[in-house]
Image 1 (cartoon, rainbow, N blue to C red):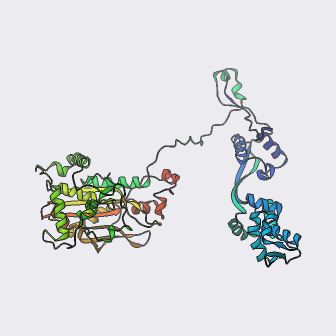
Image 2: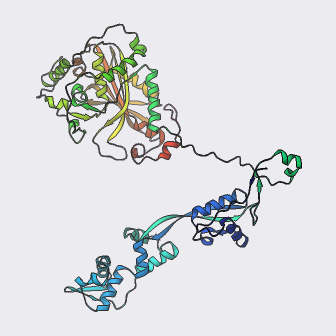
Image 3: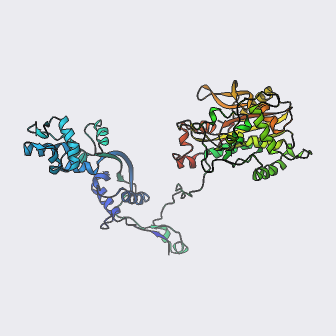
Length: 534
């Protein structure tokens, strides 16, 4: 028995008729026709289903027509039926001749009395006479009601400028209307023919295949959406940055610790305790628990670093043995370099508060992690390269280019004999990998780097210079308390992950890239990115 595709009825929503047959009958009498006038009470989804069944057989063709229509709200419909609030007030006052303001809510609804009284005053339909209301106009024209009746009939205002005012008054709303213009197709017929879907051996034997009405193959049919997962654009760009760092034998720092102490986030970086960055308006402090213990080892981070260092060509060649780290001495030396000066520095010379070092914060930069890794390096000083890409938090006002949380890309290079010129040369090579070859460097200030430089690149699309990163050489006041040798210098550089992602994907508002306003369709439809390609 060959497979067949015959008439597939699409009943009306009330179950009374076959909508596909109704469409064919309507075309017989009126070709073409508009569905909103021919089937005004039929839901759009049912009309679309019936048209698709007929169009798949080439019996009809149709065009989709979208338009925005104006509809009445419940209050607007009530006014169209009964009259406006101001009309009801005028009518009650007119009927009474003189009506006490206190009695007005008894004559009309409380809402009508509240809203209508003021509008009737503005229209000069009524006026106050002591504690009462008296009519001024003998007859009035209820324009509000007339306009809403016009909207109910025509789904639009006679003057489009009136729409905004009536929307504010919550008397109307707009909605999208989808209609179809239907015409006869090349295989139009008043009845849906039976189509054979399979060619069988029996049909070949008896010759019935020669007269059979075969269903045509649709080679353009798309498969069903698989609803597969998709990488966020930030993750795609992040992976490109990771490849650049790994190709240069950088080790990825463990950055799972979003909450850190003031010691690692500020004090160890030679950031004074009176610095504005430590104020509540710039930093998120944790209230429960409010503080941590003294600085100490992080076994989870150490295990991760041990594993990655074992796979690094730079670290695997080292034969030196590591010494034990003294965290108490490190904390004491950090205090000394702040409070009284040490290691050749005069320090900041202020009363150092131990309570500030244990305050828990949402980390404001991943340099807190870099500090931990560099102190760990002091157990066995040697050339090293670290990087991290992870989330940081700052108490900033949210706008098109700023969020209270964002991603920071950070790189750290430790080696002997490093110079500022070497840092500039490295940054030129690094940003070349991102497709940025024209750089400028501007002197800047950071508490923990000296010298410091802001990095600018020329953006051809914007036709201007834009800041793309920050960099510098870590200060001796930060490195020497860790126990690192005086001749071991350290580069530090960083940039945000969001800015290059916004440039690559043409996003102008950062809130469309990260947060609750992200469009999942945007996430699923964007292709992979190559930072070195336009």
